[in-house]
Image (cartoon, rainbow, N blue to C red; front, side, top):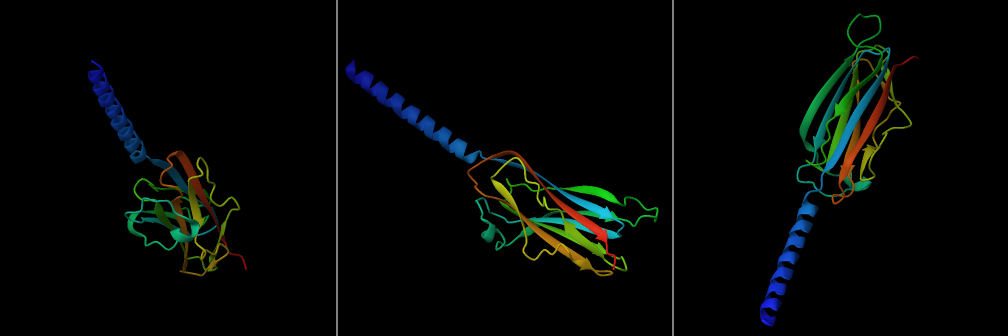
Length: 195
């Protein structure tokens, strides 16, 4: 009887160990990230077209640091959204004010994304692009970040028929920590240049 009890206890202990290990593996593989992004364009008396494009890195499911994220190779364009603003007084749609576009960043697909915003103008004097002090408006999680590319110049005058590009990186800091719900916003001010 004693042997049967020891055998039963050993089998039960082994089953419990396997169950706990399986639960640990399941918990480690079920990490998910929910991040919503918005880009706002604050227009003032400008005639511009704004194009937003997102790209991501394939097979990147790891944490990233500020320095390393800009060195990755981005491809696989996810989406292209275009917004056109018209000069006040032209009786065309849209115009002055704040307009927003969703930045569809899915950190479950890739842990590093590149967001490219292109502002094109046909204003004879060009336009200036500025960004607010609360640049990225991060909220809800410390486990991801938005980094502005070092080449971004927010006081750039865009000459007639010219354009300027602004690049941002959205990336996961730690792939083992889930993000239940978080958001970010990028706010661009686009104003008519006055000499």
